[in-house]
Image (cartoon, rainbow, N blue to C red; front, side):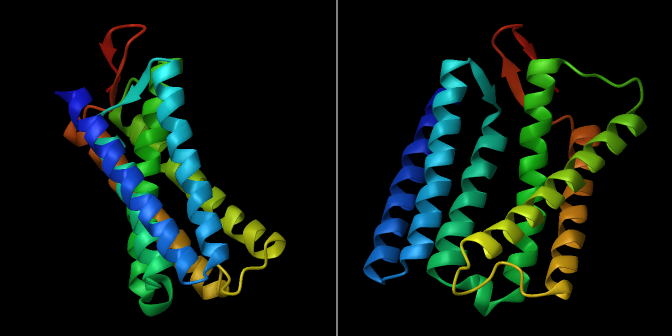
Length: 197
């Protein structure tokens, strides 16, 4: 059943993304279409690498990752919600950091089998992991603004960047609470045959 849900999610994701890319191209938003295509190719690459190396995160994280990309592509780039609503960017930073933190944590647990004696240490580790991921998001936005110089910059100024960092911190804390106090199934390592909780 887990494979059926994952495959269904993949098909729906690919359909939505390619419709979004086509709609952006028709609207002559070529820069946005290129960015959405790039993110879509990365996600498809993640799907194939997961199959090739027998690495799979749980369906919860997989679906959350797909939702983050769709929200960014369809909501942010096609419907211009980044411009229409300041709250959209903040909420997506919270959800995106939460999701990517769960994903990276799951990957680390799967390949390195890191464990902590106390929940406090693990909570701190996950929080700092999420903060680091959020910082990388901001650096990538800055690099894109400088190199690609899109018509509408990702970073609108210091206040925008600071609000993004606060949202990233909130997403990190939610991920840390979720991992440490909810017992979420992050994925299964096929090599070891054990849950990577």
